[in-house]
Image (cartoon, rainbow, N blue to C red; front, top):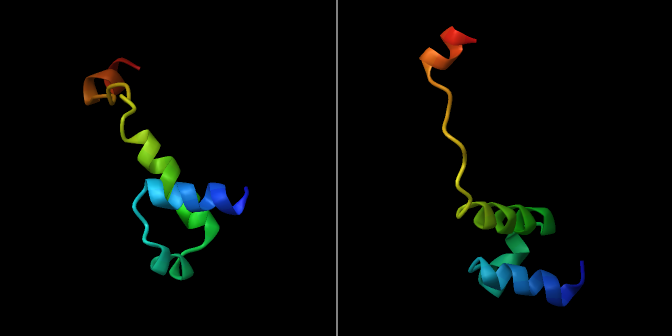
Length: 54
């Protein structure tokens, strides 16, 4: 992870530069990862009927 890449990721998720001293690198990377997951279509959750059949 380079400094420019870290700053790019922070900017992509909307973290102001002034707030970076309050966050760790890991927190910023976790927020970036979660933001990328927002568009993922998760499969349907199991219902009680599915558990009963199992």
